[in-house]
Image (cartoon, rainbow over all chains, first blue to last red; front, top):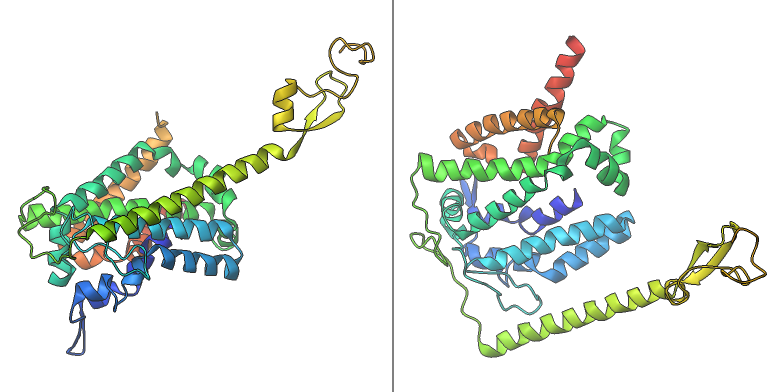
Length: 295
Length: 56
């Protein structure tokens, strides 16, 4: 659930102003929708990695749930990273305001909600969504009741809290709703764009080219070098931390039952266990005359 | 492979999705909010079956 909320977070409060709404004859819409949505000045920082980290930290401190914080972060990062695929891209490393964009599909938010949907569901963005739908279908076991009860319900305390009010059956429907909504929505918009309105498909890089897409300027070589540098430093820190944790794990003592069968406990690190080739109390090793009978 | 019971549940969701998609294609506003989708799914996949089970 927090993962789903995290994946909506970047657009949650802002997309209405990108497309525009009318209230009592008053039209509210950003003068430059792409700049407002993804840029600075604007609310483009909602699509940055730092924004996810700040919100995840707040969730962790306010609700005291590490799993909610990490899940939210994964969802928000997934959204921010995915949106780098279009022609405007995201300020992934905000406060550095350079837009990282792969130009795989057209950004057409400035053309209005329906035209934007038609363009998105005609290009590689929709194809990328389809990859995840197929992946989800192959992973159908995660949507079963037994998986929900064994792994999801037990991992997140909020399900237990909600279960005080509604049945597990209803919670299971809530759990499945994100996949149901994403898949159904993808099919519905595809039918709407291509069966009802006959918008042409254009799966070429940067397409569909029939829409007037917004673009960010291409990256300069120094900017590219900066991005490579940030990714390299981030990867190095992650690898070092991973190594440190692995070493700490292997240096931690674990209680093994003595292998002679005496039911005594032997405390060894994983490395010591592997070096000795088993866990024995002193004098209980095979062949030692002090070993209890039957060893 | 999924069991017969799991397939029956999946078919129920497919039927619910077919109706949701049909409404969404005709009235695209129906597709815009996850919470509308969630409310719809709770209605057809939990509330209605639970009501039917209680009656019969």
